[in-house]
Image (cartoon, rainbow, N blue to C red):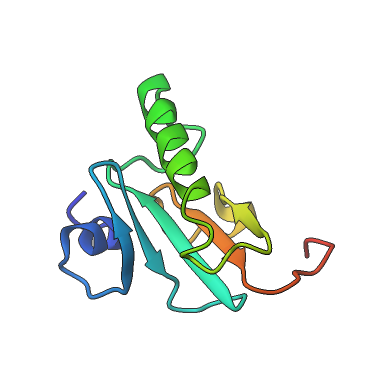
Length: 113
């Protein structure tokens, strides 16, 4: 999508701190971290959210999550992490491009606000 901020990050049109990239995804540091380690997993294919993804996109997302699981040490997540994907206005989804927040680096609150 031409106007999507995450698509622009993926294409390199907006600067970001990329920690990983392959054919399916990019992992970048979040610009407004909510935890000591706050990363975004951005699938390269644009679709708005988890509800809109196709079966093929779900398989790609599964590959991305599996790759993430192999990178926990190098990403500073060996003590544990939380994955969050927002969908829609009620969940405060601010960018309509599926993305997974990866939060860790310290013990997180045991309750979601």
